[in-house]
Length: 366
Ligand code: F6R
Image 1 (cartoon, protein in one colour):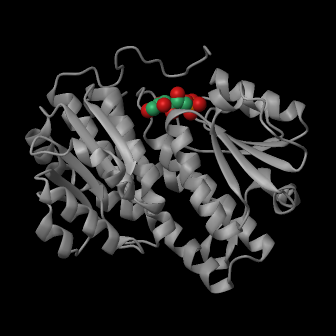
Image 2 (tube, helix red, strand yellow):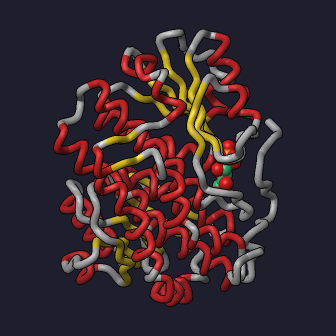
């Protein structure tokens, strides 16, 4: 049932090329310039007329929500707030029928997310679900929505659910940007084509597995890790850190790279591995200077770089390469080496990768 893999988590990491394709199949028709989501078509105006989009989720799904915040604001030009469902529901939030809520949940059973949905509905908001489990409670409690087609996710640490959530949210943003007229036809086509290429590029990123295994052996005994990223890759830094802590039990923190100097830089010494997402993007030069700051304090740099990069390669102690894509889609690629890094470190430490201590696959308690 693990399909020849040692763990479900590894199997699920390697399934990502096919499940991302399953998630956009029949919905993304790049050649024809069409992106179409059944659950969205009748509700486009709910979104385009909305004052605000509020995304509610927990854990890894919340990280997918953060990625969506960047892409929705970038392409659709609607203000987005991303809320931990557990905070939102207890906060007496300001919410009305002019708001659209997107609830993201792999299991569709997370108690806090469900309670946030019920609260939003009681205030008259329209609620859209992005779930993986067909017929789950959240998929039934939302007004409409789109399923991710990740297939069953058995490993407690979420991997393929995350990248398929981002795939759905990206398609939603593209469809809505088109409807709202906030994207040019040429950019729209560029995104559609770029998204279509992602499965093959994930496949390519997975080929660095051996290299990542070597890097994992070097750092497996570290007590702490920092993960840094900017822009679209700030949420990826958070997700990389979460993955490491939940399955290896190594303390890890994710930060926006520019926040370093406001505190976390004090942690850096020769013992501290710093994973930096330093792909070619609008933030590249800024990230390069963040790397210099870390190096000056003797931190060890493990960088996720774009294929063919030379500048960061010179500076970093180790690099993990990913193919090039348009910036908004980079989280789908940069996530891959971070999943593998946490997996291999956890395996080397003898952890129960698929069922880490204290964690359950679906959190139905509040
Ligand atoms: C992390 C992880 C959890 C879940 C969170 C939400 O790897 O799996 O953080 O992402 O419990 O679960 P869902 O998406 O089922 O609502």
